[in-house]
Length: 155
Image (tube, rainbow, N blue to C red; front, side, top):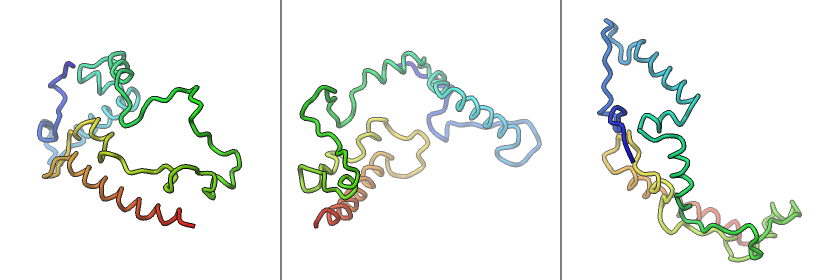
């Protein structure tokens, strides 16, 4: 995949220069450029990929070709799939949930699977690796979430 080195990957690669006598950083000229760039990214989010050397069609192909993390692609015609209950009251009481005692909620097999698939955060300022820090946070949040959730299922 081609990459344009004119776009910084880390914060320390971003060099800001302006010849105006203004002492503030960023000065009003650089801030205006930031606002214009943000406006263009809002107008066309694929512009960021274009600056990295990836065209819109190529990005669409990469997304289509990528497998869904942690999920099997289920067939729409799968008869074993459980349907949602039509009785709204039993749905909100949780009495319509069948299967395991947790209602099908299980902790992920690996922490932060989506973040790991996306890759490191380019402007991370922490001392620890971003994905390692996020994985630890996911493990703590998962444990706490299950502690809170499981007692709500006991009648």
